[in-house]
Image: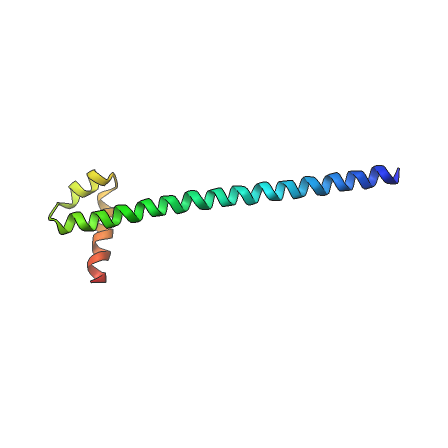
Amino acid sequence: MVINIMMGLFDQEKAIEQFGNEKKEEGRLEGKLEGRREGKLEVKMETAINMKAEGLPEDMIARVLDVGLGIVQKWLSGASAAR
């Protein structure tokens, strides 16, 4: 009887530990994906700034980079404010 209770508690503890490990792994994967998305956007922003410096119109930059015109304008206004 006592052994069965102890085994049940042990199994429950293992299940909780495994659940926690799975959640940690999910969090790591989500973090990696978010980092990649942010990195891609940063590259697009730098490209937009360079394209504007070459004289390309903002609407064309937005189309080429496949982002909204408002986003391009925000990036470019931030770039000019930083200078």
